Length: 151
Image (cartoon, rainbow, N blue to C red; front, side, top):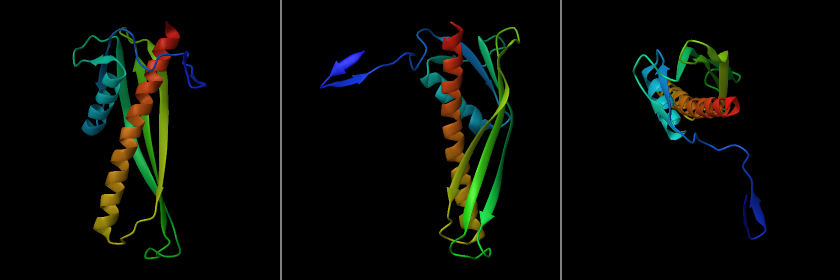
């Protein structure tokens, strides 16, 4: 416990691993693989490309969908909801499940300022990149927490 100025901070689980564990990231999407690798490194994992690793983080699928709300496609009050999903699982060194297959879903809601097709595409791609970054961080925390609970 850290105490000072009447403010107390308590932590029951460390935010990263005390000793290095190896993890191999498998993803059909190169950007997601890089983002997951960076997030896992920041949590104390050693990311490897070798066949043997303490954990194998496998992205099974990645997909997104959009819902557009507004009177017409050129309506100034048009709102877009972007839903981004990652199907994944984590296995141990002998193929045993550490985290069973599951889906991580994130959503983003935005109102495109410009209604041109190119502007909407740029906003969508930027939004997907930001959702991938958020998902990579969330999944690295999930894996760290799961491993700390196993010990």
